[in-house]
Amino acid sequence: HRDLHSFPTRRSSDLTQREMEILKCIFHGLSNKEIAFQLSVAENTVKNHINNLMVKFGANDRTQATHLALMRGLLSIDCAGRERACG
Image (cartoon, rainbow, N blue to C red; front, top):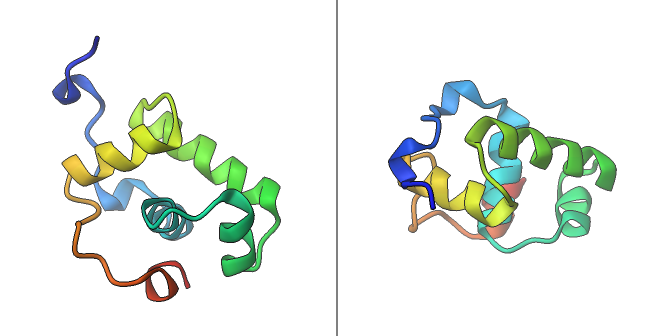
């Protein structure tokens, strides 16, 4: 089992603006379909961005990517509601 500190370090500047938006939406519990609707993009576009996030974080799934973003300070527990965070 890998130590969290062995995962690649990411800064918000390493992520695109859209990747940050999608990361926030995932954090707020939205499904891919809900994220696509919220951001007015195709669901496959959301999936592509999530795959990019997982590669950039070295994560196995979207939950782990979100957790690593929290650990790296890219997200905070006190984020605003999903409407503001995802739109």
